[in-house]
Length: 302
Image (cartoon, rainbow, N blue to C red; front, side):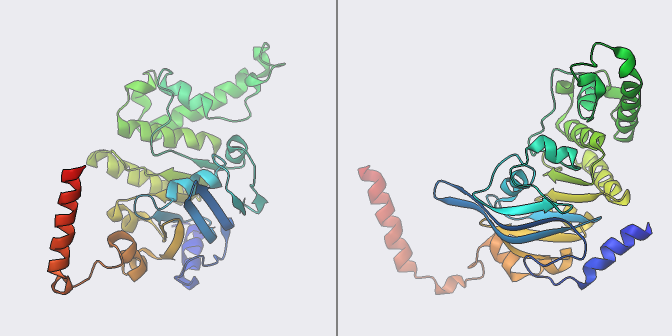
């Protein structure tokens, strides 16, 4: 294990297991981030910090605001209020493509591959700073052909790493759901990001491919990158995450190591409801019967 990786994970040992806990070396910091849709407050985060060089899981029940928070941090949506930064640079009103160029990239729960382009073309589009895309240099191939060759070599190396090299010339639309997720992850690495954010990377993936994806996520951390991912698979969360942040009803209700979070009463309440342990012998059966009869009468008259 590299010294940097050991230090990044060891530094978390002194971090208190409480919502919004400050980290020794945060790559992302955010405060008072609020996003409402009509009367619904989808995100209401007082403070969040993501430790550099480790894998952080963002978990919570459906509708907790996880993907909305992803969208806000990466510039795909704008909050009603709040501020956040990446590597100390404020990202308020910074568009998504500029956020990506800074080294903060993300994948999507529903994959965004360009189905009618070849796999290799999808990869090449992920590279930034291509001279051949500029208006004045585009007609002169001698100005950008060497760079394009380098980008193509990097794309081919990533396709081989993610076991997609055999699909190089296929249309991206022909890939399976799991292969599309691999392509998205590989394409994200064309930017050479410091932070990669994965939105439910295991959703809809068969068990065999899931193990491959797990290995790739771990390899990102081993390279010194920071990973933040949204996931519902608790086995995956326990297996690969160094730190876990829990959201419920738009707020951060708990965070800490996987072991501490899984035993946290706030987390149990968030997933099962605050009254999941109510003794059923205390329920007023007559009241339930009256409610049921009233519901049936209402249905009959409607």
